[in-house]
Length: 588
Image (tube, rainbow, N blue to C red; front, side, top):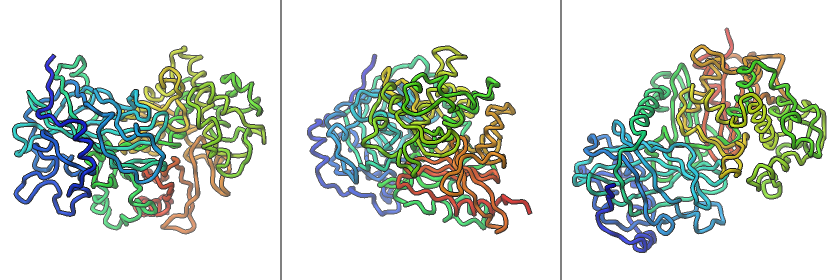
């Protein structure tokens, strides 16, 4: 096999030393074009710098890793394995908040992955959550771009997005890599991590690493290229948020993203009349090059978009009253609980109204992060024991107490129910992927989930969190729920009765009372709003919420508004009022 190594050698020690030196590029340039001079010559991550090395003390402007408007088609085709050298030694870091962190946290995991090239895109063979041997991080890899620039000395240039996720966690840090290559040579690889969606830690990581390229025809190359072409073709129609003002001149753009700290916003979007309008995607070093692949955690939106949808699909596919099944009949560990699970159904558990809790005060049971073993154990046996270690305090169905432990129990119950029908190899998360996510043409980055540590982190999907979204996923998912009534290509996928209840379309089933006048039904939050057109008209809006500040609002006029952020800011009123002005929720 041909092995292409870097042109020029810069030792790992020199690279690391370079991280400590000052550089004029410590923060993004304020020039109109921070990458190219007035004569069109690249000034950041030049060919010479990538080939020979350079001193650096921070990430560079993300524009330097972005496909330029003047880019030419790539001269060379990249197909094969890319290996980085010295990941565990080189690299710079800057902690904005969080810690203490181990030294290993500041180094990316070993990187050796295969890629193919299709129509100017560089496509990683592995997508979704990629488990590594690193003590802190797993990877996500996403498609990037390949192009030519006049100043690159006969090389083609690559950049692609990647992300780091904490082991066993949903939190994510987003970054970009870039390098040059031709038939005979590969440059060093520049990487930087400049954005995250997590309330616990904020840091920049960056470095310049030696690389080896192993060109080879990959066995599934043609299928990977075909699948990616279909993925591109099936993207939800999308425009930048600024285009909303062109399409709806009376709209107040400031209503979208309102109430969320700009520096803590990952992205925000809305769907109206079959079009997604997308904004945000800012990093600490400028606009992220791949907004469509800027991945954010689900946190507890997974309770709605995975656990709830799984229960609705089970009921519809097998034509059984699955929501009324008893937990004790499908989770044997319930018999060891200090609580009482005799009459608790799947639906009670989805509604977080099992009657087994210590206190009904808001989030008190939930947020014992440092003391409750549920949050500190990785294996199923330990987690399920902790999930059941709560006393009986009220009849099931009466009192809402927010508890991710309950969703974990339900995940196991649904897994065991599915296996009783489909066999021991059936998996409840894969069931949702195959029955819902794939038919909706959602991308492969959403086809994996955080699981317990059993079988090398391939145990039970935790259920209450653990998926990662890109905006396209939420555009398709909200349209499926809010516009298509749980149907795909005319086929009913979700149980319509359960879906109507979740979306507050059944006045006889508003769900369990929470927070005064609010409701919680089938893992969807709901609150009443007053029409911006008619003060005598009120309506319910169901939401999915995620811990850090993830919000998905399903407005009953067929529109949707969502954002990912990490300052625990949950604001949708102004956006809902604006969308009500475009399409009236209440009939005249």
